[in-house]
Length: 86
View 1: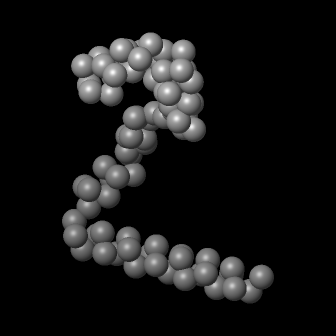
View 2: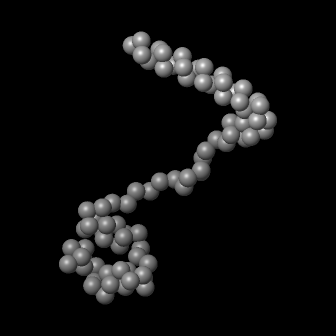
View 3: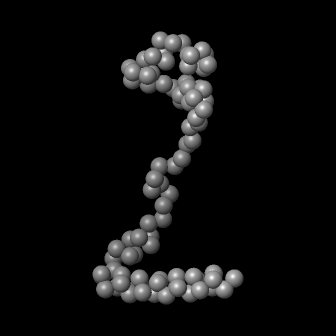
């Protein structure tokens, strides 16, 4: 049935199903489409992430990190209050 829906030969579908063959991207796309699915290309996790802030925080001592946390908690409290006023 899948072979008929996709136009891919049954032996090829069978080899893909058992892992004996790795499908090309166009073949995989056709198989997924026939199953009601699609494939989406996304950047790998962490690629293009600015780690400057993370590195700066890691250079702080635990006490300094707690101080930063207190400051940020205060800012979050103000934001929550402002949101409730609307």
